[in-house]
Image 1 (tube, rainbow, N blue to C red):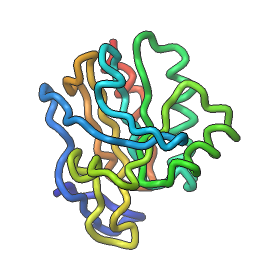
Image 2: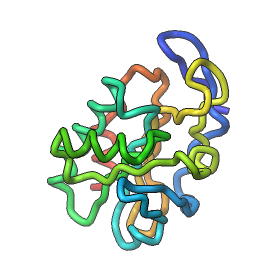
Image 3: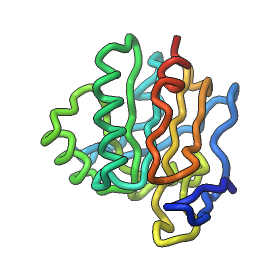
Image 4: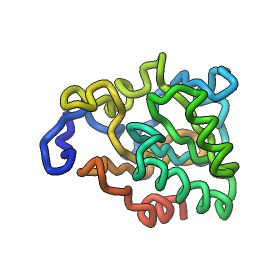
Length: 165
């Protein structure tokens, strides 16, 4: 269980992020066309998982924008935004914001949050995903993780991006 805060108040996730050096688990996440995407859809690409509670909050929206902007400069890399938001909300946000260098996927009917240790188990945000970043190589091996310690704080973009170099 990871210790996180929400505006200074302690909250917890269901577990811990995948360990560096291990291969991430497969997943079944849903895109805005209601298509199921799995790890194999991104085989051969480096992956940045930008995990957050909801696209409809300022910090989550900011991280989606920042990673979208950065992703345009990355070779052989996909940024995957993951939240419990409905796929329609994710699609609407990305279309309105012109985010075309990221894929936004929903865990609204999956087990990604539990499998990756990011489901929040208490607080008013119980059931949503914590703010975290996981970076993998082309084969799904974890090369960087960040469990953002304060939900209303942005992730360390530079460290995540530098892990790909």
